[in-house]
Image (cartoon, rainbow, N blue to C red; front, side, top):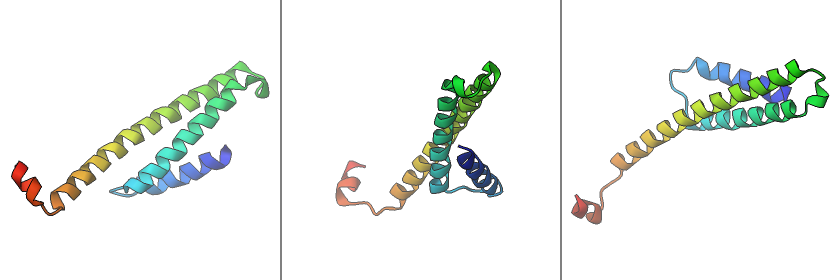
Length: 102
């Protein structure tokens, strides 16, 4: 789990300096954030490993925050993909059946 978190910190810090982030980079970060959230929640549910309720609660809260961040990234990714799809559609040559519909 620590390896994933450290990898994501590095990836997120690299992306924060960019004025525009590619959809593939967003998808990679989204996928990793979902994985990190899942691992944190799994660890939180195994409270016997942590010995204290506070540690378990902290892990559960971190998992929830990671899920929220993943959801926000997912929304951004979806909007970016929709914009890209619109751009592609507007660039494609119109066929005769498309012209007839307009």
